[in-house]
Image (cartoon, rainbow, N blue to C red; front, side, top):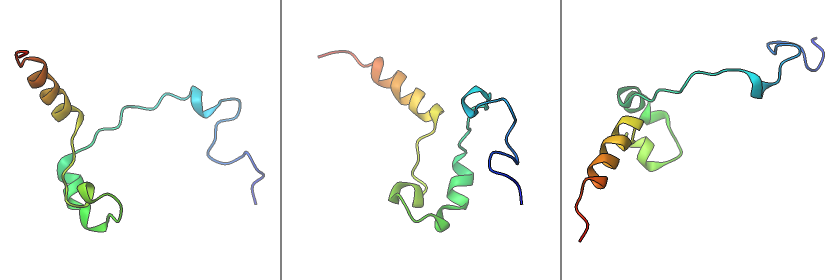
Length: 67
C-alpha cells in the first residue's frame, strides 16, 4: 500500500503549479450523455451554453443601440 502523498502526484510540485489545458465543452457530447446526468435540468436536457455561444451572444448584445 502506498504511503500518503505518493502515487500519481509529482514530488516537489503543487497542484496549483501544474499547467492544465483549457476544458472544451462539446454540445454533442453533452447531449449524448445527458440521460445519465442527475443534476441540473438544463444539462440533462442538453441546453448548455459554450464559450463560443457566450461570445456570440455577448457581441450581439454589445452591438445593440442604447435607448
